[in-house]
Image 1 (cartoon, one colour):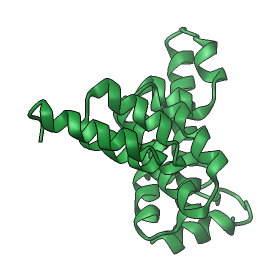
Image 2 (cartoon, rainbow, N blue to C red):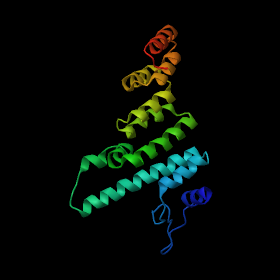
Image 3 (cartoon, one colour):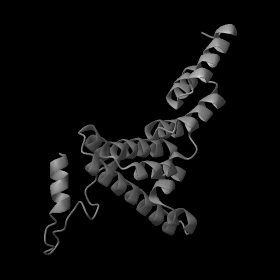
Image 4 (spheres, one colour):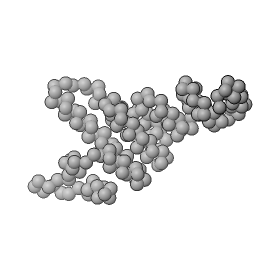
Length: 180
């Protein structure tokens, strides 16, 4: 299915009469985010990024049209990046977009893009923790885990930071306080 969609996308027909490239004109009723998930599942990471971006563009276009029809214009929301726009509109979808992009960019080794995906995160600690884990920023992970009082994750972050004596002292204090 991904091959068919990619073929339509990459090989547009000549526009003669009323024949058009239905995918590029968004006439094909597809949920591009679901296509992106399928591409991610198939390890087609560049395709997953493409369809995630298409989905974001579609959502922005729908919002722009809706704003025009309702005589309401919030120009600031459409001037922001597509990722921050999605993050401000729908947190559930933003989390899915983040997961797809983070996995895809991590898999292709684009760590700059991984950092850019944090725009979607909109202050979610679990997403930030995941980002720190991917980027191996153990000190940031340690700070978040300390705020949440997550003993196991604190122990892992201390070990990853190479703070073995602090790790040993922390384990001893946990044992003395009755926290297994």
